[in-house]
Amino acid sequence: MTPKGVSLNPNSRKTKFARRFLCALSQMRNPRPVSSSNDEEVRKRSHKIKIAAYLSMARTVGSRRAWSRALLFKLRTRARRHNMMIGRRSLCLKKKRVIKNDPQGELSQTNKLRHLVPGGKTMDMCSLLEETAHFVTCLATQVKVMQTIADHFDK
Amino acid sequence: MQPCSREMQGMNSLLNPPQISLQDLHNQQPQIQNSQIHHHQHHQVQNSHFDPTSQEDFLEQMFSTIPPPSYSWSDLNPTNLTKTAWELKPRDLSDESVPSNHDNNNVAFQFDDDSTLVSKLQNHQISGSAKSASAAAAAAAALMLQQHLLMSRGVSGTGAGESGLIQMPLSLGSDDVVDGSSSFKSANPGGEGSVQALYNGFAGSIHAPGQTPNQAQHFHHPQGQNYGAPGAVMNQAPASGSAGSAPAQPRQRVRARRGQATDPHSIAERLRRERIAERMKALQELVPNANKTDKASMLDEIIDYVKFLQLQVKVLSMSRLGGAAAVAPLVADMSPEGGGDCIQAGGGNGGSLGGRSSSSNGHQTASSNDSLTVTEHQVAKLMEEDMGSAMQYLQGKGLCLMPISLATAISTVTCHSRNPMIGNINHHSVLQSNGGEGPSSPSMSVLTVQSVTVGNGSGEAPVKDATSVSKP
Image (cartoon, rainbow over all chains, first blue to last red; front, side):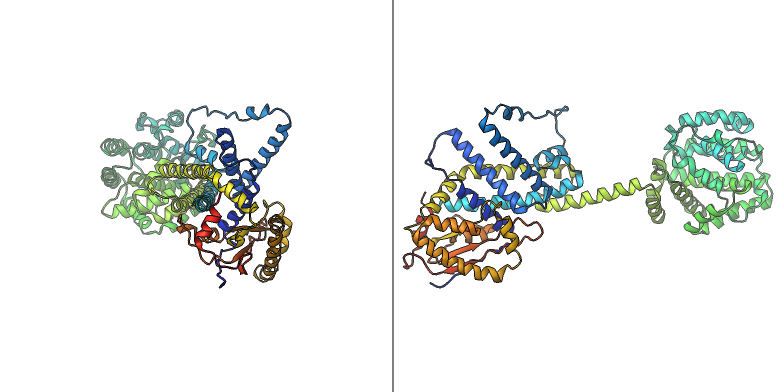
């Protein structure tokens, strides 16, 4: 019974993210059996997990970054709208999904990047690149941690 | 201001294509005004062709300014507001007289030589280069031109004039660039001085792109430099002419000055471009397959990488269905198993932790250590009773329960494998994390403390740990 110290850097982004994500996962209690072959349910669950991953990552980063703020805002409004729409028959939900088609029919590279990075639509090129760099590092951490967790549980 | 006005006229005429014969222009003053109109119309086109086309215009204007016509300044004001550097540079030169020893004899330009001169100029122009690219031809033309000019002046002018003409370029050549330009600015515009300045500037402009081996080079270089400097001072956007002349010669100083002196827009643009380049470099290091060549391809690479990462998250979230299911029952069905395998994964979804984190952010390690042990014991007690309450307690504390193996794996996530090393599994590990919402202080003390085993104190085999953890 020798104490063995597993040292996790408490200030590391990945630790914080892991913490939050695992908690989100644990809170995602599925009373139904796991092996639900229903595609719709599987899709919904995976979507929830994905949202939880992004949410926990954004929360880990906090409000320091423009992309995390934009992401949190987007998720919150979406959740709010979803909650409100659940009561009514979600009519407006589909309408909001209309994407404005680019008149040229081809997005420039900068525009593509703006669409990818949350909150990138209202940024100038300089800060867009900065946010992209930070976003890429956070995404990479997120992927690594999720991969670890998945590997661990799939063993 | 009359000399200035005259020079302005001359400058405007410089932009004119060689459609109007010099003789006509300088013989008939009214025609100069017409030429101005032509100049204005054509100067846009002729910006890049300033050097050779200016030769004849310049000279004829120089000659025409000797008899003082009274042109109003308003006539000279170009209708188009886009004054090019070339347009104003001559004016600057005209405003500033050469400080060197030019005497009135220099003014004695012989108009009878004008035609010969002009013809020679035209020949040179035709033979020479229209752009700064063919520097050698322009240099040769300039050299020949200078020689012709000197010869013509020597023939018709006085010796003093000739010497003065020669002396001035020499003196200008010896001047420092800064001094030359300052002297240009400081000198009073005199008729002769302006003419000389015009000539020098003109010759320098001819020679701007090229390089001559002999003293003419000295003469032309400072001329060209000084020629360019006032233009920069005039806050003109560096037109193609000036920009074309700059890189061809080693004019570091002038370039710097020009860069500083030009309008703040270009400086701001340069700063912006530099910042963007910096950030692109930083992104290059992040993104694999850093293709350093092209900005566009780099952007494509970045976009692809971001899409790839997002796709990976999506795929992992789908494969995580097993994981989520595993975590939930793991948390719920803790009781009989050696719950010692598990580390409590805590911290609610952040929202509830806000207040708590702020309070606990101050002291990270010390207090967390103490509180950790306290928490541990409490958790151990709770776990003996009921897993659910223990979980609730932990969640209230902002703790997280996760298997040690997972914690190990996460800590070494860069080299994670499918079989994470399972260390000593007999122990609880309590992971305490205190909120992370504080934007200013990202302090979260996560400590794993080994506690006494709960439940069966027997050492548990790794296999058991694996099986217990992976139980769906």
